[in-house]
Length: 120
Image (cartoon, rainbow, N blue to C red; front, side):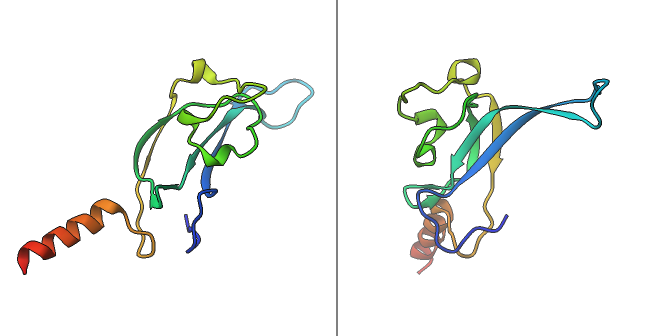
């Protein structure tokens, strides 16, 4: 995936989940898709790329306004409230690994600086 050179707090990965029925109904051609819900992951956290393993909850409703400003685990209470799969438990597991010469990760920068400090 290519990321823009300039990332903001609004940039995020949006995941949409569907149930795809393999059994055809008599009056239907092709597979049937039923929307299950959504989850998302902000790309930046404290101005750094988010990498690592995540276990995110899945929202069953339409996403609230400005949802991308918060991670799904820490979203503020909404009116009307967001309905979550399994009572807001993390059910979607993923791992993010970044390979970038533009957006560095803290651990790599810290390790590089730390190594050069001790070798001088």
